[in-house]
Structure formats: C-alpha cells, structure tokens
Amino acid sequence: RRTIGMGQFALATGGLLPAPSDWDFMRAADAKWGVSLSLYAPTHAEAQRLGEAGAYSLCTRGGWASSPQPRPPAKKAQAALVEEGALVPLPCEGQLLDVTPQAWSGDGGHPVFRCAAPVVAPSRRQGGAA
Image 1 (cartoon, helix red, strand yellow):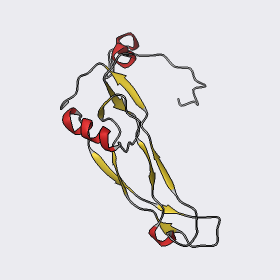
Image 2 (cartoon, one colour):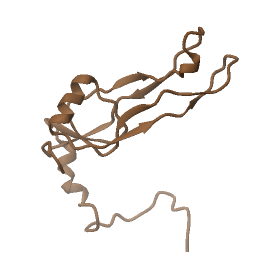
Image 3 (cartoon, one colour):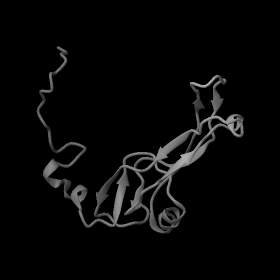
Image 4 (cartoon, helix red, strand yellow):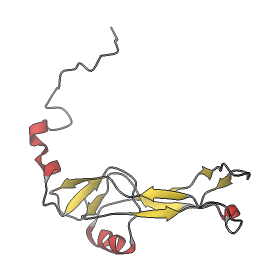
C-alpha cells in the first residue's frame, strides 16, 4: 500500500551505495580533487588543469531569454559546460558567462548571464580516467 511517507524510512545498507560510515572519501578536507554535482564552466586556468588529469564530459546549453523590456524572446548564446559527475581539480571557482542574445546586443538592453560556478564534493580519489 502506498503512502506519502511523512519522512519516515529505514536506511538499508549493503546495496548499490556503501553505508554512510564508509563515505569518508566525501569528507576529505585536504582533497586535491572533487566530484562536480552541477554543471561547470571552468576558467581558462582551470580548463588547463582539468585537461591534464581530470575525468569529464562536455555538454552544450542554450535556451531562450525573455525580458521585461518591450522586446521579443530571443535565443541565448550557447555555452559548453562540464557535466555533472566530473572529477575536477580543487580549488575550482567556475565563471559567470555572458549569454546575452545576439539579437539584443547593441540596442541598450540588459545583459543575460549564466552562473556556471560548480558545486563540488571533495574526494580523495586522484585525477585521471575513472
């Protein structure tokens, strides 16, 4: 019988994930590497370090932007981003990307930005292919 659960559950161990007491690799304060939990646009320097020993894949994101100003929606500039689950060197800050639609440039309108700073869980795992 299905219910809404109300936040009550029993933690089962021994399945796909190790027991929480074995998750020490996620608490590595002195870690030199991390696992990205979000999309990430590395800075130029970070991209060089990532290319040396990181494990990652790329994706492209775009989309549409609308404005409170009287103008039609327009296609945002595309951005190549590192996907979630990448092994990245720490520290990493990412960057703020200007994805202002080309149709809006030069007409006195507002810019459009994509925040591509990563959310990273530290890991003791070393760089290189997983």
